[in-house]
Length: 158
Image 1 (cartoon, rainbow, N blue to C red):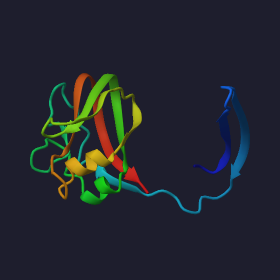
Image 2: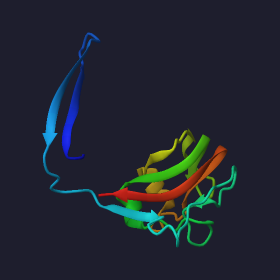
Image 3: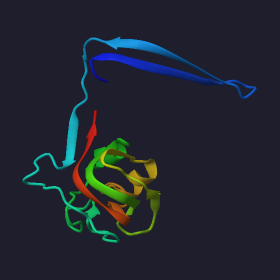
Image 4: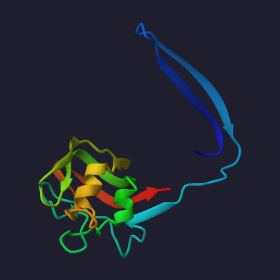
């Protein structure tokens, strides 16, 4: 949330199927506990430059310091903390991607569409169990079916 006026919308579904909604304005005057970004990739754009993954290139966005082309291994505490990863991308056109593990043995999200800007990916319990080094160690892997994009950074916030 940012300092300023914000609308909060409350929506309720009644037993008869009626949807009720009301909007309240709230004023945020001070942020007392700001979120902190924890970068997995791209904190330093010179050391970890933006890149353009190719379609069907499973190594391009594999989170593995040994088998991936760009992205480092995700720490276990990020997996088991079920963090929401935020991908900052640009030059997106027709992005259609698969979220799987590095062994291609499980698909977590299929035909995900991303656009320019910030795109979120929620780590699930299955992803943590199968991808973390403290689990089965299969590495989280994102692969483009089609389209193009430039990946600038990956982070989560707390």
